[in-house]
Amino acid sequence: MNEQIIARHWLTLIAPKAAPALATSTVLILARIWNANGAEHSTGNAVLMTALSLAAATAGVCASIGRAGDPVIAGTALAASGGLALAGVAGYADGLSLPLLLWVLTTAIAYGLAARYWRDDRRTRVAYERHVSDRREERAHIERVETIRGTTQIEVARTGAAYAEQLAQALITRAVLPGFDSKAVEVAGLPELPSISTGKEH
Image (cartoon, rainbow, N blue to C red):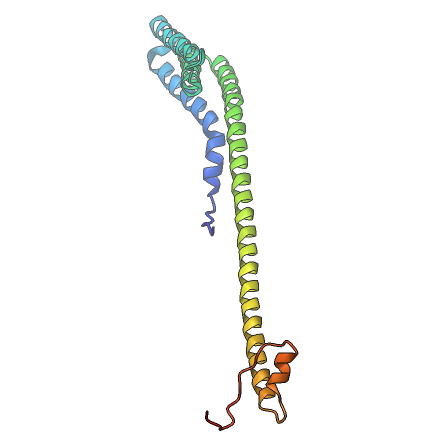
């Protein structure tokens, strides 16, 4: 019930939000390095990247259709297709205008897709935290009820024991008073009291 509270570092909170921008920026930087090393206006490299991008897109579409479709595989394949297309254009183009335009577009699409998964994850986390909170409140209520019940039983037992002790003391005290007649008590219908030894032996 007492769980350890761990404060998350701010980097662990920002990293998932920055992941799409970091991924597309990395692809753009590597593509521009590739451009500077001979990929600029290379038809063979452009055809290769186009074929790879189309193959990844086809795999993503195939993975998303049907009952056995896997959204994780589909999303990964489509993201790879977009990254390959960005890398092909950024590596083939001679200026930065088109690669930067595609980088902005690809980053916006990546954030749009990621936002959906972030919403689903947040809903799942909120539902789980609400469920855990309800269970904790329910258990705390049960513990409080059981504590009150146990305390009440203990107090009743103590009261009963004290009453029995006082009653026994009162009966003994009354029995030793001069002029006490136990037969009169029996006739009145009261419980029989223990007889007091008067020293006579039968």
